[in-house]
Image (cartoon, rainbow, N blue to C red; front, top):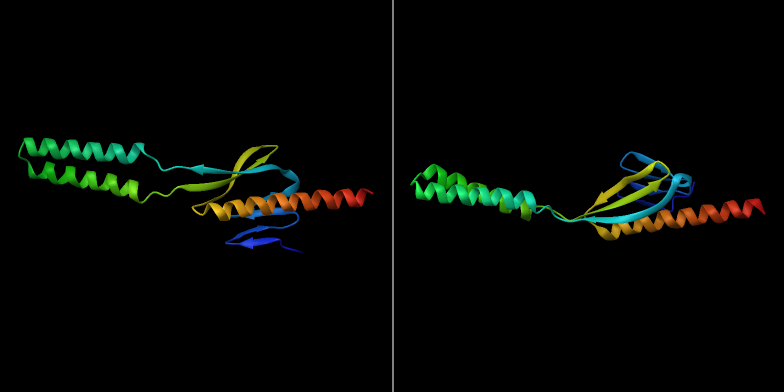
Length: 133
């Protein structure tokens, strides 16, 4: 069997898309799209603000524990923001609804998988049209 795409544990054959233990038959796939998920802003900002308030209250009350815990929370909030990645997801539309087939920080890879699925669907459609003639 020919495998038009096989990279990083994702394969697209003339019959199916296989990714992360999921198998999507090409005949069931209506469309694919790449969705970008941005960094979460609410959680890091909340942690940092709580930490800054704790540090200020600890400073006003002259409580070293409050200052230290507040500064630590502010740093944790900043680290939460700094270590988040923008992720890209390949969403597969089937008759049963839309499902996530693949998630990666590499947008080019996700787009290549989507293009491979579209090419395989096109090849399968042309092959079935040829067989009917």
